[in-house]
Length: 321
Image (tube, rainbow, N blue to C red):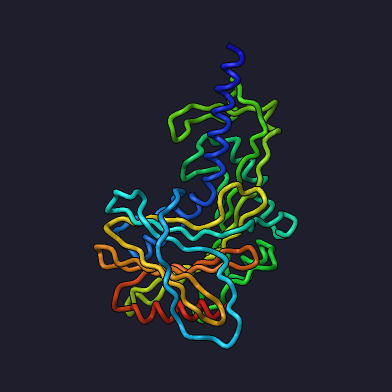
């Protein structure tokens, strides 16, 4: 009986660890995509997804260059959430190799958030929730202020001609689950599969929170009396404590189809992802790039009449690296 109870606790511990390890990128992406939805008001929903996706053919376009092309540092794939599903289109930009950043290289005040997260975890029992204790979002006046707050000197955030309307730093911290599962009440709840869990240590002071991911986000809103275009530029970092695969994943509904291509600009090969269009008439376009262990993405929302303006912003973003 003692061995059976021990085995059951280990199963719950493993499932809880897996759930916490995957919540960081999923939570950050959901928040960003929902904000994009509010700005552009498309009817389709967007969210992160962690399932493997079917590979598709990626086409190379663009003119020849007279200098060496730098690697894009990743792979863009599109497909379906499920092979038989005709409504859900999925994509993933995955990065090969280990791009996790040692905490010793992140020197900004963002590292102090773990103490605040620790106190929040003591008061929350929700693991999957909009009030997830390990997630924080802070506004900044400028991109430079946000970069200084992060303190990773290798961030090469693209400088665009437009001034962002809003700048945020979003951080995700997860507890270090080196505690015994027992009949305590330090933390308890229900896993996505329905299993109930209780997490407790020798005392609440044993709880430690590790910073696992950081994202710098700049939002741009055009004059809505003249244009439908809005766009978001992000830089995402994973720390040495991140156990999830590096990359950006998402799903779209409303019969949307994704097409992908590779475009060469400024000596670099960028992956471009286009959505065929929502039923409401909204379009989206995304561009991905990775360098110095940072994943960059430009996400554009617009209607067909503003396609040229969206392409212009996309080219400016690419050539800013």
